[in-house]
Length: 403
Image (cartoon, rainbow, N blue to C red; front, side):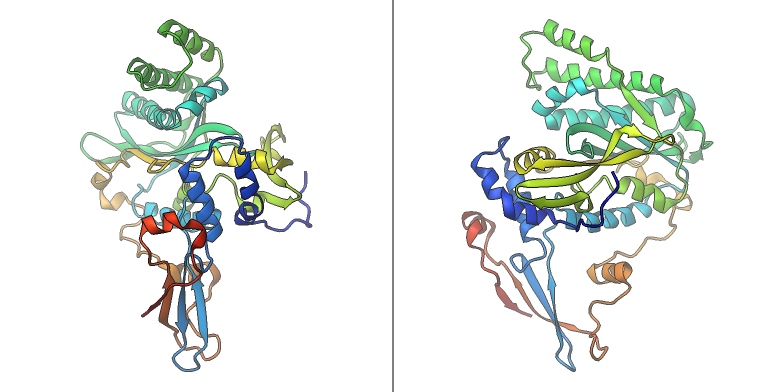
């Protein structure tokens, strides 16, 4: 369905403000502490509740208020900026060679088990998919590839759909510490073969978890569990390898959109009125001749919307992005500097430079007289964390601190 011009961007914070209190009265699923934190911080993001920095022109005394961001990884506004920072940081580290985007998807019949053991299964998904590619590289080329693996738990319609987005180098380190690049057609390997290897690695780890009583299951004994896995194996395990990406910016930005952002873009929230949230999503059941999915619209009551959305809030400390092989913390320093995309380290981008890059306007230059503004005062919550936790609904708007 074609997007209508009548829709205007709806903030996720607006939906929380309108409907979250009502949802608390009868939630669809139990609400975790991390979910409460994500909701509260998203509502407070870029408001005076978090803090304000005041800049003033020394000549004409024109002033500017700069609102702080919440930095929550489930906040759509903060996610975009954090993704750009991550991409800039990775450009300073990755090898200057072709890279491929690979998607590893769990069969639908494993989603129930995954829901009960999210951290265990999600970690196993990232680990087993990386092992699959590294084993294949070692057997075929005697190389250790560079892998960035990103967990994604939702489809575009917000349903639970765990899969891994992997960025894999077309080449790797040999046993002498040299970078060997491969022909960009290596990805034409039989993907059904890789899917079987992925299944083997995943199920090996799954049985290890089950045999050590680390899985929550409804099975009475090992025989029942094996029968369940036998039924799972009747489904196809999907591994999809995409054509190569050569340009460095394309490489990191392609996968970067899956790293730090919430599972829904606010551009896909079309309206939120009368208790119904309308979202736009990619309909993979309807694709054109080139394989591009159609765009459809879906109406969800706020209970269903929150039920789907909150299922994807990551638990505290869980690493959604992991690095393996040549890009692991152990080996990444062994990549020769002449093989880096950038030979010299890139300067870190602060808030001011980020705004200049984004808008082309320096936010701290006075619009009246052109002088550089100076920081004169900051307002933020100075209480200890335990005090804030006890008075979540009584946070004052301003806590002044003179500079």
